[in-house]
Image (cartoon, rainbow, N blue to C red):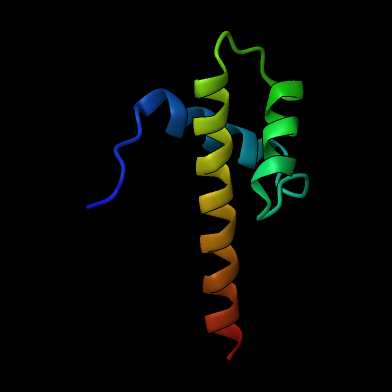
Length: 70
């Protein structure tokens, strides 16, 4: 089974992707820096969870586009 993500993580990640769709990539380290710049968070753990979920969504979207093109 997969990891459980809280609603806060999912909601924040989706809002950031909606607002800045071209900034985020499939690279976790890059996304981590962007999240820390765009959102003021109190903990590194929450920042990393949001960045990880954004990375997951970006990679998933990219794979779906590749399948549709093939």
